[in-house]
Each structure stands twice: as structure tokens, then as C-alpha cells.
Amino acid sequence: MRARRLLLATAAAALVALTAGCAHHDGASPKAPSGASPSAQPSQLADMQKKVDAAQSAAAAADQDATSTADR
Image (cartoon, rainbow, N blue to C red):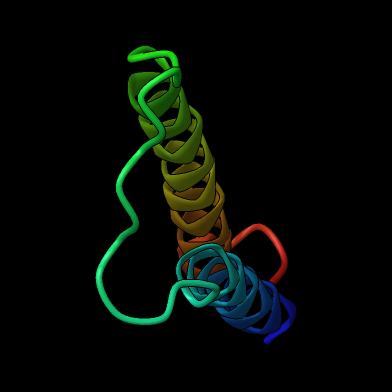
């Protein structure tokens, strides 16, 4: 039961983080200023991918813990 709560809390936290990261835009994405570094977008994408991978890993660990019989 504790593991399910942890899994649910982890999933909710990941959803909130992804929603908060995407919710600040109104409409279409603004054009980047002409002086902006072209490497800004790939860096942000890599950071988000790391966050998604960490959330998936935590969810998998919680799921494994939930199916474990060690606590029973």
C-alpha cells in the first residue's frame, strides 16, 4: 500500500512538473531573438529528457517495490 502511494505521488509530481513547464506559454511559441544562441533549445530538451528519465525510473522502482513480497 505504501508503494502504491509512492508511485501515485511520483506520477503526480511528474505530471505537475511537466504541466508547469509547458503551461507558461499562451498560444504559439514566440520566435527566438536573432541574437539567441542556437544551442539553447537542445540544452533545454536534454534537461527535460533527463527529468522524464528520472521520473520513469522512480515510477519503475516504485512499481517494482509494489510488486515485491519482501514487506508481506
